[in-house]
Image 1 (cartoon, chains in turn green, orange):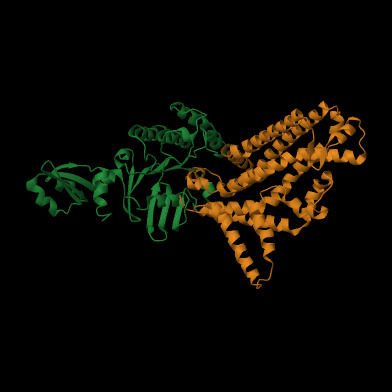
Image 2 (cartoon, rainbow over the protein chains, first blue to last red):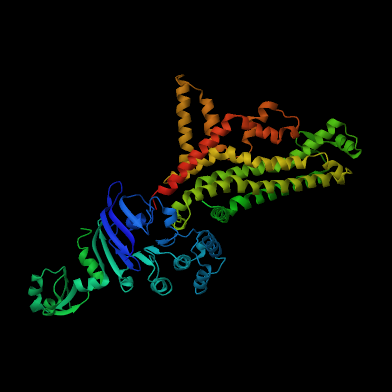
Length: 285
Length: 325
């Protein structure tokens, strides 16, 4: 399989902090990767490196380009929505479409307009007159009409209400994503993207602490609901995490044989957010 | 960097700065015309029709002479000059307004989108940073001056017609009068000055855009404080008589050039005014392309333009690598 992003020994140091610490990873084509980590873990720095927005040490190859020296070429095949509300406040819907249509060789105007027809946006509306949700709709319409190979989303739904958030990911999945495209997304609302992800990367203090696809994650991690009398036995197996619900204990195990766990109680696949919380224990301590 | 991208980038600048590039000159022209109309009406009503046009007064005596087509050659020339000044005065005023617009445009153009983070949107498009900076230079030094100049010409012609019409009410033949002025020469002068403006403005545009791309905050302060501080230090050493060159040279040839060259016409000060002294008695002789382009024989304008291009290259570099979003 052809890798869309290949990072080797990626490091980035800001004045007083190491944002990326010798990170290596590969992202194959046709995946939706969740890059998840606490605040200040280096998520945005990693994305900026991929997009050629920042300098770094190490090797990085994105779609065959070096983002430092070949950024202009790279941006023909990569799109990104960084945070919400980065559209210039003075621009009108009509102007934004005209501009992107004329400078981007892979922009499909009809697709963009069809998408906007499903919103309340009007051609003469300025960004400064829009709500945050509408701005994201416009941005998404522009980006989804670009036939890019890689889409990078950095907290795309921050500050949106749940209706817009659901719609955002639904549109992305239904109208945009296919096996030739790759999406990298960071967000704090892990539960909302859990079901669309194919791959998961946890990042903490500039290091990748977990890099797995969702299927292997289900095989490797297991959550077991254990009654009080079995709890001691469960603790013997060194669970990652333990919490109490309705007088029972829920244990999270990493790499323990499923047959062994079945004896303890009911097995479930852990949610990404539970796994995240267990993995990141002590981050802010 | 391709032509189509540049075209759309320049267009983009206009969408954003319609207020400064288009409405500022249009409104200035309108205000100017209204004020002049008010002055003429006031003159007519109070009956003291003594127009002050440039260097001559149209008093009763001249007016009589005009009626009779009985001006001597000197008088005719003076009337023609006065009409030329009427036409140019609007362009002069617009030039000042335009200078302020370009000054603040250059200071903000690579800074404002970093401040509101919309730079992240522009950088998500396949446009090189060189194209971005070049398009902004074109907007400031070619496209914006053309609009301001058209406004100036249009307003100047209306002014001319307003005065001619007023005079015709006093029995002076309008069309004969207009032949005394040199509208085509002045139009040629204004149009021909635009390439010169580009060269002349480059050091200021370069310096302001360099500050705009580099400053993490308050680009205006940096752009002004740095050259002034350097000037003060040089002047201080001058005071102690230990520096090798005069501080006056620095203020005139460096500070004024990197801050105020965005105001059009500065080059005339360097050439024509020096040749003609303080009292150019013939407007037509003063405002000629030959006078304007004489500045090209001085090394200053070329050195300034080269320095401007170097600073613009610096602006491109900062645009590419400034990482504060």
